[in-house]
Length: 269
Length: 269
DNA sequence: TTAGAAGTATTATTATTCAATACAACGTAT
DNA sequence: ATACGTTGTATTGAATAATAATACTTCTAA
Image 1: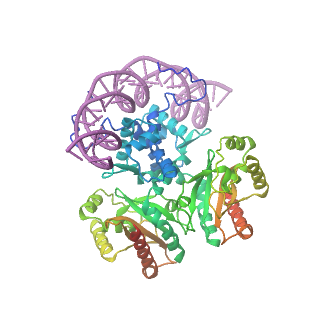
Image 2 (image 1 turned 135 degrees about the vertical axis):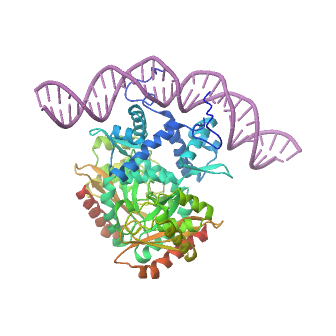
Image 3 (image 1 turned 30 degrees about the vertical axis):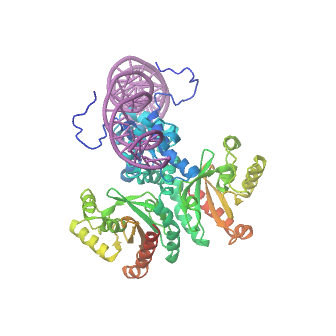
């Protein structure tokens, strides 16, 4: 029974090896990210969760209950609304602690941040997103932009550009095809050809600079980090802000710092 | 059927509202933290996961498969070993973004870190643990000690002391009773009476200093953050290191900085 | 005061998880 | 090289645990 004739080949999620309850639970957690980004909500009611996670009321009830018991969601007993809880921080800790690149990068990033008193970030690719793994914040920026775990589309972030530029063509094209070329500011480069051009320049230069691509007046510099097999596994990214910094001063001071730091990390991998 | 006569009162985990598959999934993720701390392992084999999570091979197989599909675990196809994956960072991001204290604290922490070029951390209580929520790292320290999400026992961390000291007696005692008074260095204060003394001093002083309590040669200063109802909800903590800093210079410079910053945050809550 | 919506509790039903087991791949010792 | 033990993968019938319907309660706002 339960043979799904539509399952043709490759591992599907209707396998007996796929625990769909687990997925639903994670879907409930995931809903908070969407709600924060699109609706600006810090907490959600049961019905809101049900709607956003595409679960019926009963299911939402079961999963929120479970997540609260486990300490991953907090429930305000007065408002009956749910919000992410501190238990969730455990997983980020596990991830970073198991990450050799992060371990090697951390002290070098701290040093680098002191040179000009700038923020320094380590980024990794996840699907078509760029994820900020480690952050050494030095600047008041919009709150979201200072939190580790932040995701932005790789195609328009300097960190994404330098990683993609140094990945095999096939892999790069696959990622670009699944990208959603949305723009954040009036300056975001979303034209496919222009992105290609930017990628080429980044590859030959060994770095990328993006101006106001995601945040207005931000000048974002990134250089690729390679592992011992020569694969671009991460990016070292340094954001500075106009008018304190301009393209010229960034080229002169930040670019060498980013490249050098990225190289030092690569060397130790 | 399935009436559990042992379930007397209060919500139990044998409820129909508790999805135990979800718990098992999280148990698998949780195992990595233990493995890292106790065994120093970055990745785990299927059998290791099964053993540590107290699941049979089949269950471990199902849950690891699911977690890999969802992007929360990575599987090295050569070694067949599992490690935490970047997807896990999403949850930390959600948590911090929904956290008003963190939002208000961030810019003030950045400013504070620049004053003497020190690390500045924001801590919250979770059970009997202190969790580092936000970190502005400025010092080379042991890698674990620089990652957000790190947990240490509250009873011996300066941040834990100032939070507990300002919580209602009953709540504090309950937490202390469930604490595991283990020591990290030869200097860790584990004696129950001495901890009480430390708590009293911290309450009347409005801050706490711990020397070599968790890390040798670390001088840890913390001040409590209060919400608008006067509840101690977090701690602002600043670690410095001997011999560059000593107790005297810490008292003179770091203590006022910690207190002032904590107060500024409290004021805006 | 009342209506309607949102949240909570309780069921029978069955789909989904489960654990046993067979099979395959690895690697290590002989 | 070969065989054996160990570890990982695939398959399956059985039954448990997740499900969704619904009744009940609490809240909110007209």
